Image (cartoon, rainbow, N blue to C red):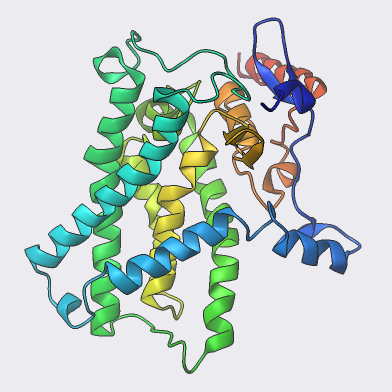
Length: 334
């Protein structure tokens, strides 16, 4: 079996920290390093593979096999809207359920690579029915699923009727594939902006605290949000109402929004597959956000947190800097 001590260590409270510091890819490094950029784009565990490739593949499959014809979606009908709602619910259940079953129900790797050694709360008044997993499921299905579906239905309906710009693969193949490549970057910028917004105290107290109740997040925590936050979160797909896009681009955007929070909130740095294969979740940066609240609002390819002074690299020195900054902000506010 894999030994987690090869990759990190635990503190006195049992919290695991990887040796590897949080960092960004070479996209915004200067002077530019073309070879490093190329490797980062196409290597395993880089920008495209595995996660963005998985999300794009799922979007293509959903568009090809599990989306009604454009002609059908020209007019609103309970039939195709209900179909999309059920299809989205199945997709969410399968994707989130696999992570939850593997890591939290069967506990196939115990707490190996788990940042916080504790398991989800089962008696905490911060959660509906005092149970973290039940709380997360309710917010995901009662709020996340319908709001996601509404954005998708409206977007596909407008594309089917030609109300918004439409991009065809046959006439614009380069732009068609370029949009796939750049959408995750747009997602990072949009998420950073709305994330900073909902940390504004009035919105945090009334909206974002639902998500941040998960200080020790699990797979279902990713989409566990207040309905207002879901509206902000999924609003990024409105970009396809403005720029020329194909329906599969909008589906990729929505699939990315729904699927990427799962590994991002898994609570484990790596998933052990078999005896030796490891799948990096890249969720340490966001775990630190749930731990310290005011750091790492965005984690990915664009160093937004470095540019705006909210970056935590995961080191003990980073802990000290964050605590000192938060103490200073608290003293300043009083």
